[in-house]
Each structure stands twice: as C-alpha cells, then as structure tokens.
Length: 463
Ligand SMILES: [Zn+2]
Image (cartoon, rainbow, N blue to C red):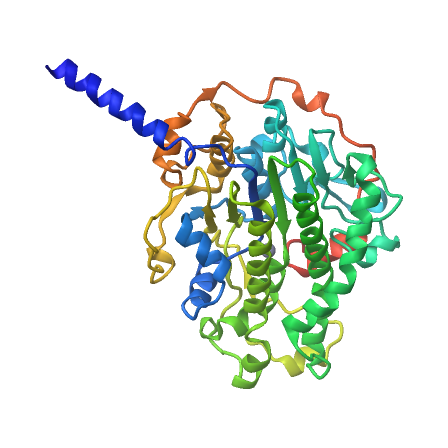
C-alpha cells in the first residue's frame, strides 16, 4: 500500500508539473539592470510615500532581498564577481588600478577586460548557445568576441573628443568599444542621439542650479559625465531590446546613483550628520539623489515593457551607501571660497553596506499577495551574497553552476515549480585551464586617461 501511495503521489506530482509547464518555462530574455550603489534604506524611504513604482511592482510581482557584498566595496572587482561568481583573487580584477604597475608617464595603470581570468556569464551563456547583450558593464573594455553584443564601459584617452563625456564616452574611430564591429556606427549614432536628453535630465535632477554656491555647482559639473554615460547606455539597451537583435541575456550598467550618492548623502539624510545642513540647503539639494533613483525607476519600467511578458527582469546593486565622515563639519560658503578645494564628498560605501536585489518573471519566486513593505533595511530578507548572482542567473538560464564558483544558487529567490522543472545541476568548471590565454579581445588603445583617473580621485577611490 505505501508503494501504491507513492506511485499515486508521483503521478499527481508529474501532472502538476505538466500543468505548470508554462510558468516553469525559462525566462526570455533574462534582463539584469545593474545599478551602482543602490541603498535599500533610500529605496524603502521613497516607497513609503509611493515613490519608485516600478521597483515596487517588481517586489510585489517577484522576490526581493539584501545581498552581502565584498570588502573593500569597489565597483570593478564586485561587478566582476557578480558576473563570474568568484572572488576577486580568482577573477583577477582587484580594484581600479594595478597596485604595482604604471602606465606611460608613470600614470596608474587601470585594470581592463584583459585582466579577467575566468568566464563571465556572457561567456558561459555563449557556450550554451545563448546570445548576450552587455551594455556599459564594468571591465568590458576592450570588447571580446562573444555571441551577442558588447558596448564597453571605457574611459577615453586624454585630450580626445570622448574625454569630454568621459565614462561611457563612445568615440567614433576608436577601436575596442563595440562588438561586433559592424554595429559600431549604429551604437555611436545612438550614443550621440542620447546627448540632447541629458540636458532635460539634468534639469529634472537639479532644477535651476544657476544660483547654487560654487561648491555645489562644481558637484553638478563633475557628475555630468555619469549622467551622460547612463543616458547613452539606457538608449542603447532599449534599442537592442526593441530592435530585433536577439538578446537572450541583457546586462546593462548604470552608475549615477553611486556618483550622486557620494555627493548628496548629507542632504538626503541630514540626520546622519553630527552637524546637519540647514533647512535651506536641504530644500535645495535634499531631493537630488531621490530624483536620480526615480530616473532609474522609470528606465526599469521601459525595460520591462521592451522585454515583454516572457522576460525575467532583475535590478541589482553591487553595494549600498551611507554617510561618509558624519562627524566632519561641512561649510558650503567656505568650500565655495576655495576653488582648489576637492569635490564635496558626504556619502560612501567603505563599510560594505549590503546590495539591493529585486526581480520578477519566470523562475523568480512570487510572493503571491502584495508583499507589505519591510519596515526597515533589517526587516528585508537576506538571500546571500553578491557572489550568488552568477550561479543564480545561470540557474534561471537552465545552466549548471560551476562547482568552482564561490557563490551558490540563491534558491530562496527562485520559484519552486521552476526548480522542480529545471533541477539545479553542477559542472566542475566553466573555465578550462588556460582559457584566459585563448580569449579573443579586440585590439585597442588602453584608456589610460588622466580624466578617468581624475574621476576616480573625485569619487574618493584614489588618493
Ligand atoms: Zn562609489
């Protein structure tokens, strides 16, 4: 009798699987919007008053979590760990600059795509016959020959045309930025088309800033490159999704929330500071970072619409943010009187604050009923670490985890019917010995840009 019951249970089980076949299908495409420095605390703060409707919808329709991050919380190693599932010591991207090497003229030598030693998910997806479209992602310059499209995040040589737009400055005639090369003209045209949008977004973020104190005007001027880069990446990502390019996996990176988080934390959360800013200052600058988050939210909605109903959409950050030097006195008048003063910096992520994750679509666990907003960051579930991103994304693509990955599949984020239909599997490794020497990377001049180094200094990453 027990055996019969078991058989009956198996039959019922398989019937249930058949019934759930559609919902258990693999997502198509799998879209990841990577946003630097998104902090749960600010997300929840905005959602309490109805802000960030697209991210809220993702949370309601799917799963959300905190992910712990790496120390030091630096973007190049972390984003590479997100893409590879291994720690920086293994993937080879240890920071912004090579600690012991110098470029021409003694300039620090930046890490590039050449330094990555293990496969990223776009390499692994290509092995499985899938096409990836990767836009603005860290450490993708010079581009590599994969199945799909790569628009690299790259600096620009000093004095070049692109050095004025800096990060993401796609420069016609400069090689190594777009794969495949025959897409260069289209991608460059899209980046140029996005330029007129930047002024409107700047207006939206800052309002009329012509009468701001010089110290704050400098902040606006020195954040322009990041807004321009994000605007171009967004335009390109939407075009690839809408344009009939087959993208099975889409990764797009946005950096502005981190850049403005470093600049505007003091006025976003005045209560974090021992000597808080005046009410007048908060009125002028207190909403800038919130508006930057709102712009990301709008883009998330556009990506969802462009990706279609069979897509799984994930928004993830590499780390959160908090106050920087909360005890320091900040006097805008004094700062403004010193044109040689460094850029104001009041936010940071040296304490490895946890990363943001929200996703919805096939494969992602669905809360079912509208989930109540967590009361605070501590009440937000922790689903693991940013190292779990790559194995989890692979699971969503029906691809086995590499047993040599440092991260695990974050099963708490995945749908149980999906897991039943696509049982988790493992292979020893996705990166055969010697793979790094066989990579096909475009020949390109390195972005040993003084400008790039200056940006990094301005953000406090380099002394
Ligand atoms: Zn940062």
